[in-house]
Image (cartoon, rainbow over the protein chains, first blue to last red):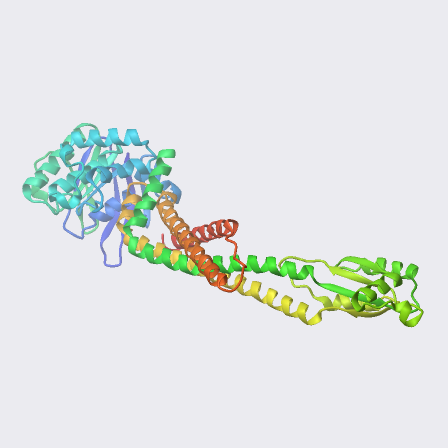
Length: 216
Length: 288
């Protein structure tokens, strides 16, 4: 589903990844670990094709980084859910409206949007927060809303970039458990974190970035 | 498809509301500036009507040589009638000239001189091209070149005065409209630029969840078009106030009233909305 073949992508300050080759299969839960600045975000950006490799090829589903046309990138991103450390929620919109954004982008009808959003709100246990603004939620709840937004479009994979980075331990655990639950339902998860202690005994497949080298 | 369209339109309206202070300033600026164009156009259209009436009074009198008889005069009239810019040419025979003399001076020319020395002639009316200056000089020259024409008389000073100001007025209104429309494009473009800047979080999120460029741009286009539309409505209202105010002022010393013309306002709304679209397009292409 996701393949890296001899992928190199480095920056002027030396950060990035070099000559990475690996695959991620459907339904896997993969954890990328490494210190801050190791290249974990670069790794994720290569997958949703925000940046492109200097060498090698990244493949996601039927899309390949060396062949994809600019107009196809949005189609790729509709198949990939994203969760960020700082949640990336719109402050002036309710929980419901934030979660509905990917469905509107895909042209889903209003009735279907309502049903799908309510399903995901129920699934993640935040139905009672549907009309709240992000500022009225705790950090953990905001991250769950962010997760709901990623999940609502039924993605092949969810990319989670330091999803627990701004959360207290209890909220972090809650988010991790939700990611595992989503994974059990068949969605692949690729999570980047520098907090190894949080994930070390949970049976994930680990990849480590050390000096730009991806060790699987 | 319709759901997506409605969503994008609602996003455009939401965006307009979110940047309401800037939008209000833009709408007011467009409205006040464009109201001058509407008012000028309304006044121009009214003046145009007056000028057409004045032009209808333009009259050339052509006097033929003494040796031209009525038959030859009729041929000359046909010749003159064919000149470009002449709407009609009517023959004044020697006998009719004598009748005119009697009407004007109360004396019979035969009683005075025992003969009729008055030459035949012709009275000409000019064509009245709308929105175009009438230049009488080439017409006069062509008439004078016709063999048998002795003299051409016309209201030269009046015609020159009317035609000079008529042309100048329309040139000024056109230049003003062009400047305001250009200003509209820049204003809308800058407002949309600010709006894009204010909503960069939304743009980023939309792109991350798979929005196409068109999807991201559409609400900004709607926002710009709405600003233009509301601006043109303000212009319509303000210029209506101008017209009513002018009519009150005119009522103090004349029966003449400016006529409010809906077609001009409708045309202006359409033109401003179009240029708002251009301004929005400029901004989203440049800054998104």
